[in-house]
Image (cartoon, rainbow, N blue to C red; front, side):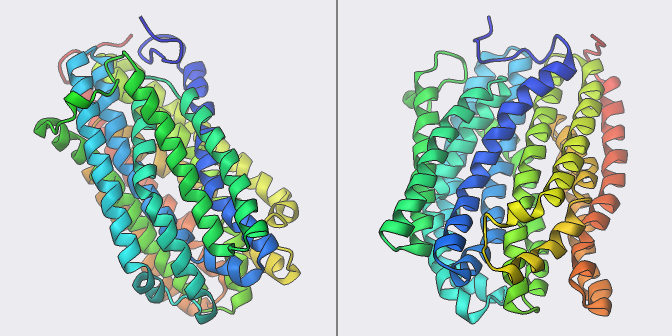
Length: 453
């Protein structure tokens, strides 16, 4: 019998269930974005453009580390969902306990790496001299929260595999409110500017991690945690890493490609850099809402694969693709229409606002294109395939972007020619991803247990 928070993804109307699953997860992802966004908003409003530029200069690195942990957790989600679909309680228990240890270890390693090499990485990005000290301080403090971020995403992935996306939202809402309050307190009252907003973020992240762990240790479901069962099962660890590591690598490679983009942005004056930092806040806001639908895609496909419901796999993919494309277009156009109120959240400087509009004007009509790439990758992940999609991403969205920077951007030397690489790279990567998904989907039709219900 399903718990009131859980969802049977193998029966019932797919369109309604995917939407019911995705909406709480959208808000959950938005709240995670608000951790970093509120940092930028508070320092931009109360500490000035230098502090804004310092925090904004770390955005790509923060996205790389957090995205990698989310990618690793996607392996937990897909494998847990498959065992839930096949009704294997033993498989669920082994996966969850192994995954907890794997994700915790990853969070600790990311924390140590980020703290140790913060300055070197920021120097490689050509971070402005007037921004680098604040950026190093922010990044080092922020990375102390990586273990908490890893644990929360682990717990959220386990719960979403069972169809529970509401309770992680509730926990992040609590943590998000705390984050905003602490941001204002540390910056306005304590005058800690960059250090204060970083400290507020990690305290909030640890609160969300404690809340989700408390739930899992109290749970009587198969996915509940028990200290005596915390052990690494080699086969489960291998399968989690087979899905999670390529997904994490995908985020890292995207970030590395974006480091070249950031370095190119840094070749303009500090006003353009600060404008880019302000406008870039729209990216995680929109991407992470779309990511909720990608998580639904992987979860529904994995559960139906485990349950032998092959006919629901393709329908899940098309529904999620339509939802994510629609979300990208609506949100992108919305950001463009309300660009001035949106940018006023992060800066009071008119020159910085005008610089930011260069990015918003190009990106607003590009986000929807990314759905064809990312939703298809999520569908392949739900079928347990991530290595080939990751190779395609390396070629289409990493190598291609670097080539674009040294050819198209090098020729035109305009900020618009730089931002256009996103839409073109998404489109070029999407086509082979779709062809690969069609190939592996057809193979599932010839496998054992074929059903169409």
